[in-house]
Amino acid sequence: MDSKSTIWQRMGIQDWFLTNENTSKSKNQQILTPDNVYNYVIAKFNDSIRELSFADRIVFYHEYIISFNPKDYQEFMNNKQGIFGLIVNETVKKFYELLKQYRLSGKTVMPSSSKWVFRLVSHPDYASGDIGFIGKLLPGGAKKEENLRVTFIPRQTGIAQTFDVSEELLKGFNYYSDGYYELPYIEDLEYNEQSLDSIGKKIYARFETILPEKQFAGKKVEYIMNDDEIIVSGEEESRLDSNIFKIPTEWVNSPHLQIRYNKSDGKFYLASYGERTILNEKEVTKSDVNSPAWVELPVNSKILLNGIVGVNLFKS
Image 1 (cartoon, rainbow, N blue to C red):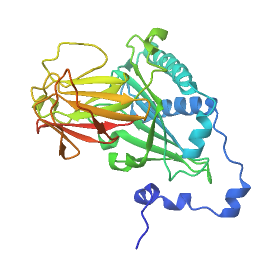
Image 2: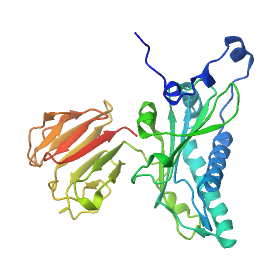
Image 3: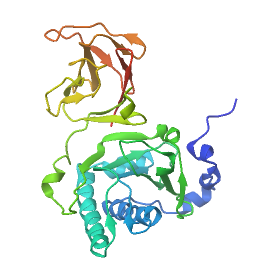
Image 4: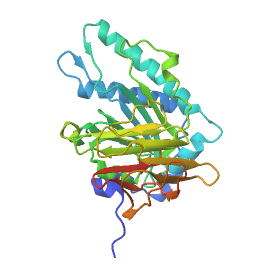
């Protein structure tokens, strides 16, 4: 029986990661520092401008995913609680400085998204010392294959190579709540400390839903769960609180779901108030708002609301 193929085999670059044991031991392992990560992201930002810009318009990635070996990730984050938030802080400040220079030189600087997204991830196929980058042009919108670029720097050669990849290849990456930050894009390019209030907030989960309406064709609605308890509601919802996940469609009841994160056991739970809710192909019993009946909601679950609207849960 053939062994399960790695991400590198599926991309056709497995040979880069086949190492001679003696060669591997003779080389010093790269030690990842905050300065390494900061400079790496800035370099990828500049690379994206060179690769994507045209005429007088400056185009750049809005989502930056930096990937490590799982052990390297843990070593980087251990005893550095909150360090990635500080790196993001300084990185965005530098982004604006560079973009202002382009604007002053007469270039057109317009964003392709309303936000910046930063993630630290790991992948079991990465060897210790490997570092990778995934850039996305339109985070949270229609993700086109040509907008997903992956750069690999194998520890054996130290030479970076870049490839276009599909979303399918990204399923093996592990995402961490303490390695996710989302910031608004500021049009006047003036760094504002208050705009970075989201840095350091606990991210419990990420939800994605695809709507049936034509105006949302090919698009996803994304919601980041910062509160330990949220309400999923439909287009009739009038509340604007941060714990309200409003799905703008008549096919979702208002309210439809209540979802909570239990810190004691680290699990999610769901209560259904809508007309019909299917959780991982099993129907959830409808309960009263004043007396919710909780059922466990596993990570990576698929929820179907009223047989029409699908919602996926991911641990950020």
